[in-house]
Length: 375
Image (cartoon, rainbow, N blue to C red; front, side, top):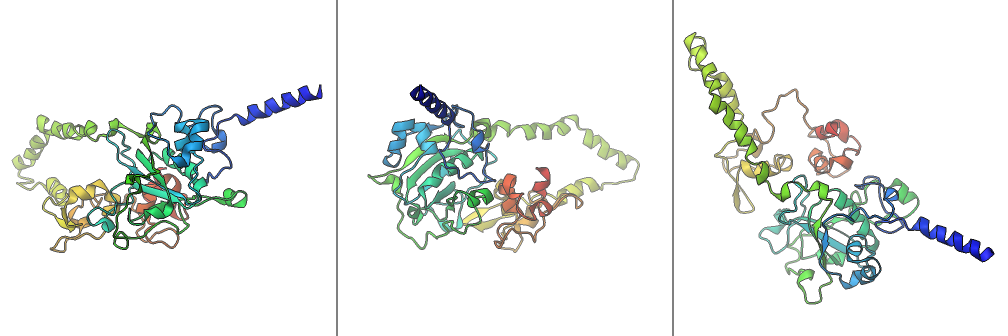
């Protein structure tokens, strides 16, 4: 009888522990990590289970995990065995799999021209500890960092490959886990080395003994819109702009003051609009290439803050007034230009707007940054 009771108790314990953990315990999920709380995962179903994420191969560092749980779970959860050397991943653009709200590109490959002055190749992130991998994957998956995910062992292999790479720290159990807000920030461990300091370019994923692994269509599918193309909605504004021309109503209204001799040929409304347009002739040089307001418009929150100037000394914020929001009503919300979080002056409202869901929680951000009032 006693043996039967023990068997029943054992089977009950297994049933309780059969709840899927993605990744496995112990938890390193911090307060600002994206996605549902780890403890609330639905029984028997990983967060990525129904996604089109496609792992291409299982490398030696994940071989044991692939054998026990399958390749998809292994490459997205781990556990990873890099011999304690850590890891790093690059999320790079994938045609047809794009999140238009994902703007946190942070690196350039060192074989690119002027790599140290660029950050347009994708997002790089890693750690010097193996057990952080699954927690970083879960966080960035739920943040919608869409693209092709390529990873490898060896945090130090970032040197000579990329100009910078973000870092996720290990979170200890107990007080550290309880108090952890964001393991991706405020630790001073991100790789900030320059390509110039490491002139030999080596991509570990191109070597014959590569231990790299790739997951295509990475990220929460709900964050990917329009098949990754911008063309789907590109014509809509043009259709709306054409309507006034078809009706010709503005021209009829402009003619009325002429008949009454009240306005003459003056068109103050049009003049005011013309004063607050982007300067089509504005050009400046960046990374040996001529840039204009169209380039500023791709990342206005960041680039309007940078001190770009034409050879005539005209600043981008003045020349690209419409793009940079200089046409807005002065009574509308404006970011506090003097605000920055912590001791890093680059952690300003532009930085907050890149990841508002958790950075608006930083001290002073809600009061200083307009984006926080929209959340």
